[in-house]
Length: 72
Image 1: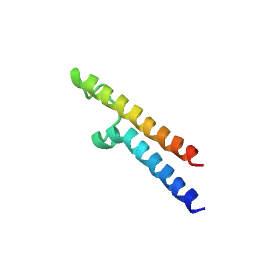
Image 2: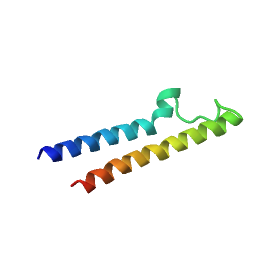
Image 3: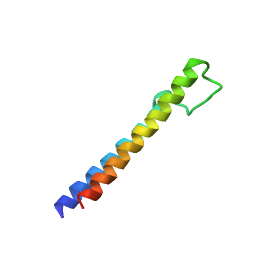
Image 4: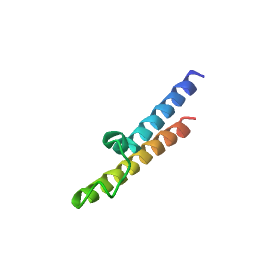
């Protein structure tokens, strides 16, 4: 029973960290992706940053769910 609670808490923490990573560009800049405000090379850099944070966040969520299902 205690092992189940610990595994569930690790899953919840992993999900929260993954969601924070996904939304970190929005939290840092205070706005969603806006083509009108950014120009030139900054547009490409912001797009790459937002895409990579989405991918990394999804990988963290996937790893948390995979670890939880393995320990069940």
